[in-house]
Amino acid sequence: EVTMYQFQLIWSGFQFSQRKLEPEYTTPTMRDIYEFLSTLFVKAHLSSECSIVCLIYVERLMEKANVPLLDSTWRPILLCSMLLASKVWQDCASWNIEFSVVYPQFSLAALNQLERNYVTAVGWDMYISQSLYAKYYFALRSLNEKDDFRRKYNRMMLDGGGNEQPKEGRAVE
Image (cartoon, rainbow, N blue to C red; front, side):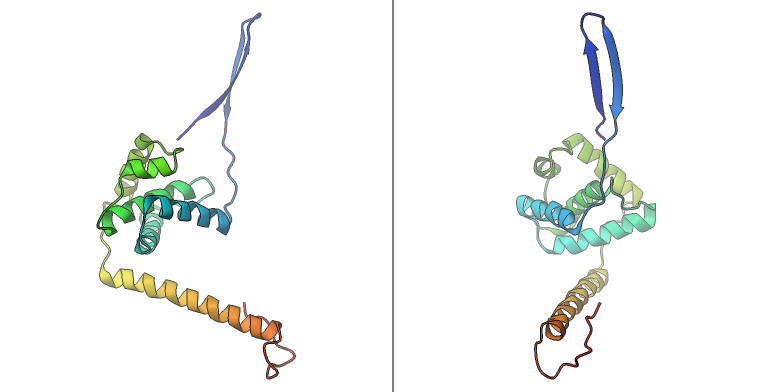
C-alpha cells in the first residue's frame, strides 16, 4: 500500500502542515482491464492458459476469503492471480521481480506480501483439477461462440444481410 502525503513548508515562519492524500479510484472499463492484462501477457511472456487459471484463482479468492473486486482492488487481485497462475501452470514460471518490473507501482516487497496474503486467504488451495480447468475452458468458449452468434445475427438483421429477414427483426441481446 502506498500512502501519499502533501507537505506545505514556509521557511520564514517555520509553518509546517501535512495532509494525507487519498488515491482516487474509478470503475475500470473493459478497455482498462484489457490493457492491464495484455501488457502483463506480452511483457511477462504468459501463455493463454494462464488466463483461465487466473479466472479460477480470482473466483476462488472471492468465494473462500470473501474478497470483492472493487475499484481499488482489481489490479492487485488480477496481478497476483496471474502471478500465481504463471507459477502453477507454466513450465518456465515467472518471478515476482518480473511482474514488479512490468508494473513498478507494485514493489517487489509489496508483491511478495500480496502473494503471501493471497495464498493464506485461499488456504493454500492452488490445485486445479483437469475437470475444473475443462469446465472453465468450455464455459468461456461457449460465451465466445454465443457472442459471435449474437454479432453475426445482429449484422444480418440490422444491416440488411438478406431478403429472407423479417422487417420486424430485432437485435439479440
